[in-house]
Length: 611
Image 1 (cartoon, rainbow, N blue to C red):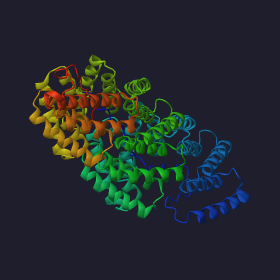
Image 2: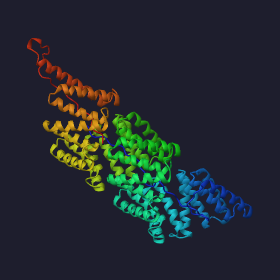
Image 3: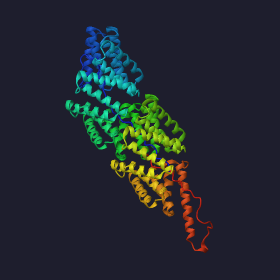
Image 4: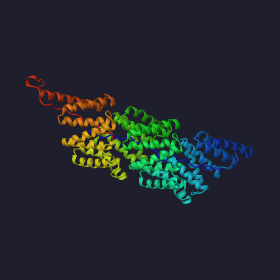
C-alpha cells in the first residue's frame, strides 16, 4: 500500500497592514483624509518655503518629507521614494550626516525601499541608521527603537529569523517602558513580535501577545479601526494554526467585514483577509468555500499589486494548493511554477516562502510521478529549512514528512521509516499529540509498521488517530477519511474482511460526496475497495469499480503513470478471474477453459489518499 502524499502548504499573512511611522515629520498628520487635497496644499507650501528659505532649508525639507508620506498613503511608491531621496540628500548638505533629521530621513528612505520590495537596497540604510542613532541618540530613544522595529521587519521578510527576535524584543520592551502597554506603537510591535514567535513555533507566547494587542486596540481605538482589524487578523491566523477553527472563522469574518467597510474591496489588507479566510476553509476541508476567496484574492492582487509582488505570488501558491487538493492537477502545476519562479526572483532561493513553493511543487510532481525533479526540490526545501529554521520547526518537520513519502514511493523503505520517526517525534514535541500534523504523521508511520507486518501496533495507532480526527474534524473530513482508509486496508491485510468492507465502503461514499467521482483520492478509495472485493471473490463488482478507477486515472494522470498502469493490471486480473468463474459454472460440455483455479494473479493495491 502506498503512503499518503503530502498536502501542500498555504502561505498566509500576519503582518498584512503594517505601516512604518515616518520619523522625520515636522507637521505630521497621520490621519490623512483628503489625500489629493493634501498633495495640492503641500506642493503650494513647498513652493512658498523654497522662495522664502531655499530648497534645502530644514523647514522646506520637512514639508517635502510630509508630501512623501502622503504619497505613501496613496500607494504612489515611486513618487514617495524620489522625495525621500531628495530629503536625505538635502539634510546631508544642510545639516550633516549625524543630525537627527538626517538619520530620520535615511530611515524613511530605507523603509520606503523596503515597501517597494527593494530589500537588498533597504537593509544597509536601516542598519546604518540604527548604528548611528544608537550611538548619537541612545539605545532607548524612541526613534532608535522605531528603526530597530523596521529593520526587524525587513530581516524577517528575508527569512533571517535568528537575527530578528533581539531587534523585536528590544523595540517592544523599550517602547513599552516609555509609552505604556496601551500605546498603538507598542501594540503594533507586539503584533509583529507575536508573528515572529508564531513563525518559530512558539504558539503559546504568540497567542498571549496577540490577545493582549487586540484587547488593547479594541479598548483604545474601537472595533472599526485599521490597527484593531490588523491585530484581529493576526490572532485569527494564529488560532487557525492552533486548530481553533471556529473561533478563527468568527474573527476573520469580523475582520473582513470591517476592512471592506473601512478600506474597500480592493485594498491590499482586504485582499489579505480574503486570502486568509480561504486558507481557513482549505484547512477545514470546506474547499468549495475556499476557492472563491482564493480566486478573488489572486485577481485583486494581480490588479492592485502586480504579478511579481510577494502577496500575488502567495495567492498563486494558495490557489494552486487548492486545485491540487481538489484533483485539478493541470491547473495547479502552472500556478506553482509561477509562484516558485517569482519568489526565487523577488525573495531569493533561501527565503521561507521560496522554500514553501519548492515543497509544494515537489508534492505535486510526486503525485504526477515526476520523481527525479520532485526529490531534488524536496531536498532543496528540507536542507534550506534545516539551515534556516532548525530541525524542530514545523516547516522543517513538514519537509521531513514529505521526503519520507517520496522515499517510500521510490522503494527506499528504511530511509522512509527513519524520516517518519524523526517527523513524528518532532511534531509531538512541538505541536502535541492531538495536532492534525502530528496525527497525519502518526498515520504515515502506522503504514510503515503495517508494511513491516506489525499489524497490532499499526492498528492501535490508526484507531487512536481516527478517534482524534473524528472528534476534531468530523466523520467526513479528508483527514478522517484518510485514516479510516488506512485502518480499512490494515483490516484487509489482517484478513478481517467482514470488518474491512463496510469501513472502506463508508470511506468511498465520503470521498465521492466531498471530492467528486474523478478526484484522485476518490479513485484511490475506489481502488482499495475493489481490491478487497477481489479478495472476497466478488469479481463482477470488483471489475466494475476497477474500470472506473482506470478511466479516472487515465484522465488525471495519463496512460504511463504507475498508478494508471497498476489500475490496468488490476482490471485485467479481475476480468480474467471473472471469466474463469463463469467457465467453472458452465455445464461440462460447454467448458472451454482447461486450467484450474487462477494462480499467480497479483492485484496491486496502488495509490493512497493524499494527506
